[in-house]
Picture (tube, rainbow, N blue to C red):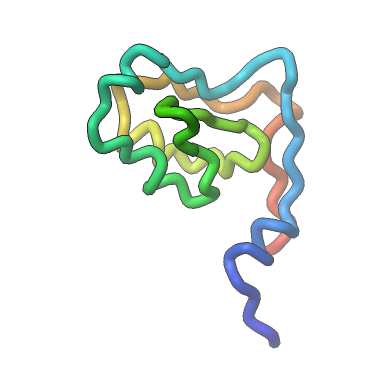
Length: 92
């Protein structure tokens, strides 16, 4: 059996994005004062980015692992997506 790279495994998954409700909400003011910005380095899907000095996040592709909630408990609100939305794992 061929072993797949993490990027290939992520590409197999399906993401049902809820456009009306974001399950992760960043506190922009607290993000600006954060020195280490661990969310950028800890997210296994690489969804947090730094653009023009501001942390950005895209819900599409979120693995719902909660890593960002652990590394940054004070700057974001994290909940599971509403029923029928979120990630659908297709492998393993």
